[in-house]
Amino acid sequence: MPVWQSIYEELKDQNFELISAAQDTGGEAKAGPIFDRAEVSYTAIVDVNHTISSLFNLVNVPSGVWINEEGRIVRIDEGTYTKSAVVLGNTIGHDGYVPALRDWIAKGDRSAFIMSPDEVVSNIRPRVADEELAEATFKLANYFFAMGDMESANAYWDKTQVLNPDSWNFHRQDWSFLAPAETTKNFLGKVNALTKPYYAPMDKLPEGSE
Amino acid sequence: MGLAAVLFTSGADAAGTTVLYNDQIIAIDEVLSSPTDLWVSPEDLTRINGFVLKPEGACLEELCIPISQSEDSDLFVRRDGKGWINVTELARMVQQPFLSDTDAAVWSFGAIPLVRRPFLESAIAPDFALTDRKGKVVRLSDFRGKKVLIMTWASW
Image (cartoon, rainbow over all chains, first blue to last red):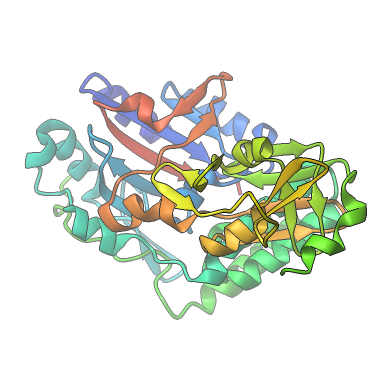
């Protein structure tokens, strides 16, 4: 996150805003200190219901959505990594992501790295009926968590993950309330069992040069 | 579903029902409820999901679900002169997912597909209202005229 603070400092005077939303049901107690340590000056939200992921069909963190001056999405559902890396055998991020962002901020609609509405629509992750029900189920679980009823929260988090087994956010949020060793074991187990990429492949980006 | 109207007769005073929709927690004082259906006053319907009861039906902007208010139906009943709308039947009609926890009297509603169409079909960013760490309500529409990168992350 300190990296994004410096990118923000560089771009903020070019009619640009960065909205960072922590997908943290545990709330300010969990996410707040991390925002504080990064000394962020951009818009910082602790999004306990994962509303941003829910609205934009995101299943992973970190993920990014680019929105132009008219409120139209020009890129969606990509890992906001500043460098590509291989993590547990999965390539995540792209070296060209931040250069592409700079290009778009500078050139707007003339940037070669933005997508047409049709391209964006094809990159929106579709949801079947069960996956839509998972969104409502997750919010019910979070309601019980906020009321201090962990038994009910856990029951509905479990249902959420059955309804949408492809959302890493749902799994990892639930596992975050387990003992650390258990969290790691669950995460590695699911990553090692992957049959599809952890993130959707990224395209229409420059070769990273920085 | 037609039987629901007779099943809930003793529930008219059921207090403390909670509805979750669109990141809001809406407390409803008075409902008629059965295990499968939730009936609310027209005013509470609007508080829940923005639908407004008009002579032509329950309307959300240009979408109107026709509702006859002169006779009882799966969508509307009159009890002691007061009208009640079946918010769950309305959800079924617009293919809005929902579930309930009967013990806690909490109903959680998912997205209304029609509301999602500009996003899913035309890549229009859905608006939201979330409170930032300074306590200020942030809406995406506040940033119209700027380029915006929305980024998610998590502590876990």
